[in-house]
Each structure stands twice: as C-alpha cells, then as structure tokens.
Image 1 (cartoon, rainbow, N blue to C red):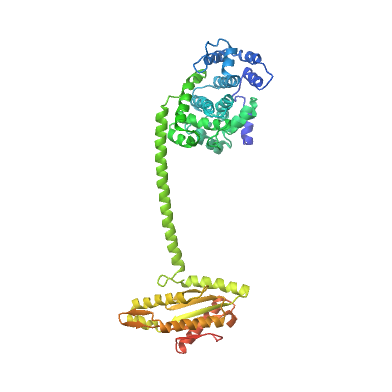
Image 2: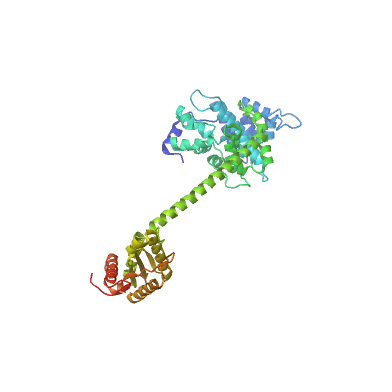
Length: 495
C-alpha cells in the first residue's frame, strides 16, 4: 500500500510520467467495445513520429505479409489493437521522459532495455504455452511493470537512485524501496496505470509483477508477467546463473527454454528501434542454459554437502546432549540415578502422593563395613562391589520403583504405591539376596556385603515435607547399624 506521505507527494507532483491527450484518447477508445477502428486511427494520426514507427514495425520480418503496410490502418490491423496501444503508450513515455542516463539519477537506458525485454519475454512466454492467452495485454502489463520507478525518480530525484542501488539486482529493488520510502514501485505503477484509465486487470498484473507464480506448469497471464522481468534479467544482468536458478522450475523442458530465449532475442531489436533503445547484447542461449545447468548442479551438490554437514553436526550435538543429560541424571559409576535427580523425583512423587492421597514409601540403604573392603581389597574392588549392588538393586526392583545412588555406599529406593508393610517386605528380600549373593569375586576371594536399611512411608508417619520423610528413613538406617547391621528398621521412631 502507498502510505499517505508518498501519496501526497505523487498527487502534488506535476512532472510525473504522463501521456499526450492523443494516447489517452486511444486508451479510452480501445476499452470501448463500440468504438470504431477509424476513431482510434484518427487519434493516432495526430502523432506523425509514432505513426511512422508503427508502420515501420508492421513491415519488419516478424509482422511482414505479402505486401508492405503503407497506412496507419494497415499497420494497426497487422499489429493488433492492444499491441498498438501498448506501443503508443510506451513510445510516448520514452519520448517525454527520456531514454538516456541522467548524470545523477536513474539509468533510463537500462530501464527501457529491461522494460522492453520484459514485454517481449512475457509475450513470447505466453505464446509458448499450450493454452491460449491474451498475449497483447500481457505485453502491456510487462512493459509497464516498472513504470512506478519513473514516478519515484521524479519525486525523489537523485536520492531515489541511491535507494535503488544496482539495477542489475532488480529483485532487491522493491525491498530497498519499501525500507526507504514505505512502498515499492509496483504499487506506484498500478496507481499511475489507474490514472491513465488502464484496465483493472492490467493494474493488478502490474501490482503483482514481482511475485512468483503459484503454479509450476500451467501459467496464466499474470504469471507470465511475473516471470518476464526475471527473463529480462537473464539476458541483461551479470548474475545470470542465479537468476536462472530462481525461475528454472517454471521454464519447462530444456529445448523449449533455448527456443524461448532465441525468440525473445530475435524480436528485441525491432521493438528497441521503435524506442530508440540499443537492444541488449545477444547471448548464446544454449551456452547460457548449459552454464546455468552446471552452476545449478554445483550448487545442489554444495547444498547436499552442507545438509550432510548440518546433519552430522546435529547428530554430534544430539550425542553431546545425550551425554550431558546422562551426566545430569545418572551416577557415572553405577549407572543408577544420582543424588540430585533422585531428590527431584522424590519431591515430585511426594507432592503427588499428598495431593492425591496415594501410598508412598522410601528406603534408605547403606552397605555395611564398606570402608573395610576398600582398605583390605583396594578401591577397585570397592567399585566392583558398588556396581554389583547397583545391578542387584535394579534387578530385584519391582515395576514402578525408582532406585539410585545417594552418595558413597548409600542408595535410595522410591516406592510409589507402597505402604510401610510392603516396603519393609521388599527391604527384607533385598537383605536376603545380599546374604546369598556375593558382590565381588576375584581369584579365590569371594566377598559378601550386607546392608543396613531404614524404611519410611506416608502411612507410617506424618510428614509435611519430603525432607522430613528422607531424614526419617536415614535415621532408621542408622538404627539398623547400631542394632547390629544386616537388618531393616521401619515403623515410628524418634528423630
């Protein structure tokens, strides 16, 4: 949308690109289904220079018939009404506004080169499609798609050339205009087209001319206009391979692409001559498409390599995150949950059990005389004993129980859904396993390790916090040690 400040500037400017009354009259008559051809010809005949050029164009190879056109009527009948109006409109603008570069400002010669190339490209693209389209209307919209740049150049002066920057990178122009002016030249161009009385369809096509087609194969008139400017850049701009990569999905088969580019370049000189514009330097279509294809292949290969690198980096990050996650949650020696994570889990289960009135028990385990194992058999065998006990604890744990290493030779088991009785039964079974299963075997040495265990449960005490329940289980474990070890202490006891 054109903002208010820019619209006021456009409304107040009396030097905007304008059309002579004869051309405005022709536009008006061309949209009247009842208008007679003679009326249109009479309006055009007031411009002798335009008349001469239309007759000259009608006699070029592209439009030539068995005999030469000698009158404006014959030229109009040969060119077609819509194309005649387009050429009259464009020629009048080029003549009144100029088609040479300004010392400071827009490069008008490049502007008209691109506009004419876009118009021919749009028409030739439309003609190459299987469906029949209004190719002359497409020519008009493509020719005028950048007309808003002339209006912005008029009201902004040299500052506009600085905003636009490199005209060879046309897809960036609209972005710079919106940042610098609050609107782009397609909106201004549609506004100008409305002031000249051009059709709503033409105005819409100009407004959408810098979009990309939604369809891949079956293009409509508006989408031919969208692609026309990029086809012009393919023949004019330096970064041809990048432009080809942008529009390649809509250009059909390779043979058709080469023919399309050849047709555009064949027609351009005769149209450019009408506007006193030097046509773009001819390029080898086959070479351009071949080099573009090679560039696309190289870019795709590079893209695949980048994707592979990103996937490998993602895998590496996932492995690192997994290791970090494991380090945060698990004890490195035993593989059981560590103290920090056990505490978090117990707090969560304690809150849930209190909130929903569910059973919950906690078992605190300490391996007996563990320092003696380290002193008499070495820390290595002490570590073996810890890992063996961790495996035993994990193996005998029932479904839903949570077990982990609290620190040193101390372990904890969280028993959701268990009361004091069932938790005590589990603790006694664990002691029985330790009496019959040695934790360490080396050489002829077999080490049995017993445990002192304390049990606390919500049904065995009034605990307001998880810490109170944990301290109770720890205290009962110490009672088991004082009473001779290798035993379980549960039930109420003072702290």
